[in-house]
Length: 486
Ligand code: ZN
Image (cartoon, rainbow, N blue to C red; front, side):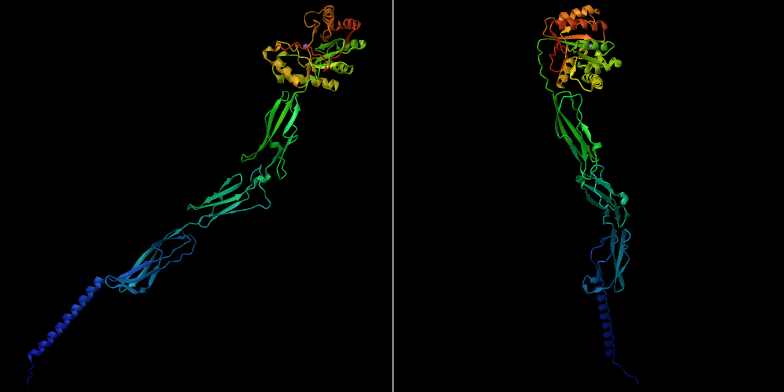
């Protein structure tokens, strides 16, 4: 028999299942929609940032990176996700490296990148070497004791070091390829070897006016005992024959241009003139210029015979008779300088020329007599105008010669033997006429002229007979100056 089911019961069961199915499908759809809306993914927290720098050669320690899952609706997960790091940083090689951080969430991998720059930010190192017992020398300069420069990245940089030498230090500077600069200073103590200039005779000296200045000397010694005297430069001049104050600068400079100096003041004082002593009675000073010469010996014989002393103003023009100067001196006659060359245009061209000529004659006199003389007679006399090609030269020469203590003599009785006559009788008459009645006569003759020498005996006998005294000139004798005209 066929079992009958009530149709209402079967339909109800079917309907229930359908409703359940629909409800499940709805729940799944809602869940999927919520998941999509939530958008769950990974969030990274990078300690130190996405770009960091690390020094060359230093170990790289990653500052770390955290990862958590996060959704729009659900927020951050409470547990951290494991993070995988890939990539490497080689700090022995400059450059930029990328590190990749990866975390897994549900079905997907998420990653982020960090860039690491390996940079050279360390300056090179300069090492100074020191020489045992070395002291820098002020004069010769600093002798480099040595140095090295190393850069941890670029290697040795010694030959790129710039060296700057200063007065009190040496500066060393070098930069590496990345522009990091190293600077080292080596202090110098040059000053300990700075020399001192010692002036013999002191910083102030006083000298009598004289032909030429002779420096009393100086020395430059440094504290190491080095004698640097030969490097001393002397500036300034002393016109030793002219009264005045002169400054001499002694200095020594080193390679840095530093100078040590000393100053000397030279006071040139004129020699005080000896006082003139007026001779007593009637006096005749016979003076003979331009010798010695061929007749000088004969004249000396005559004077010796009469026991009379005269004065010879000598030249260097007749070297063969120079010994007559010595003989005259030994026989009590006075010797004075006349001139070596008797060349007006030379000797009056300058003070220096005059003094050079004068020196030659003085040297000859010294050779013959063993002593110098303070007596002289200007060629042409002090009143000459032949020197007017050099205006004022006679005034200047008279001044400097007087300052040096020399006495120049002119004459007040002329014999006429310089051109007026060549007759002995006229010479005799001129001299006797000039001397007669004169308290002090200075007679000018030339002992290179025989007609003039031949007049002397008559003059002597006349003078001695008439109470005149014949004397040689000395520095106290009356000078009978003509008066300077140039
Ligand atoms: Zn003369």
